[in-house]
Amino acid sequence: MEKEKIVSGLATVWAAKNLVLYEETASTNLDAKKLAAQGAEHGTLVVANMQTSGRGRRGRTWLSPAGESVYMSLLLRPLCEPNQASALTLVMALAVLEAVKELKPQNCGIKWPNDIVMNGKKICGILTEMCMKKTDIDYVVIGVGVNANQSSFAEEIADTATSIFEQSGERVDRAWLICRVMHYFEQAYAEFEKTWDLTGLIELYNRYLLNKDRQVRVLDPKGEYEGVALGINEQGELLV
Ligand code: BTN
Image (tube, rainbow, N blue to C red; front, side, top):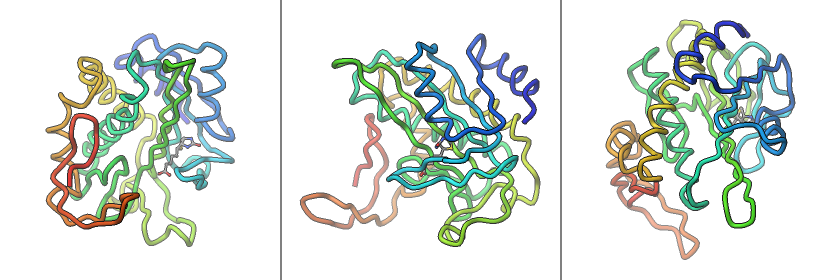
């Protein structure tokens, strides 16, 4: 990974924040959590060239081969209520989508709440984890995996996953992509911070929301039902 490029790129958009780079690590989310416990500052970004135990949502693994894709985790210490922090996942999804759109503007969007999809297949997953100190947020870690240059996927995800390279035919400069994601995240976070919700971002998010105006199945604990997705509200919930 081109460290100098990331450092100089981030210096212009994510000024004076701490950047931690690993050639190989178990999971950047775990690293960010360890650093947070040691007092690392808000805005610390952990990036790895490969992960040996990349973690996905619902206890799944996230395959993270060397040199192929983007594996990064951002440590935040937001001064909001714990129930407001879950919307940060959507803030990051928006940032990744805007960065990816610079490379391939067509046929990509957000599948609620935070998967980035290109031509119907997933190119990015986000895993957000929060740690509390008594009743307040101690820190939030937003882990982002972007399939940038992968050309093969494990059998079980081959039908649902793809990479930007596979879709565009062009290799992605990962350092550049990280800088662009952080550029858009900084903008979106500034908007989020004004209200500690998605008020200033709803319109943009809904523009990219692939589920909008489509039939969706809601897995409600009181019983499943179908309806038409209208878009998200200020809290990031999908209105059906
Ligand atoms: C998902 O299942 O959709 C979320 C995947 C999140 C993967 C990223 S890669 C960087 C960070 N470190 C991890 O161990 N997981 C996240």
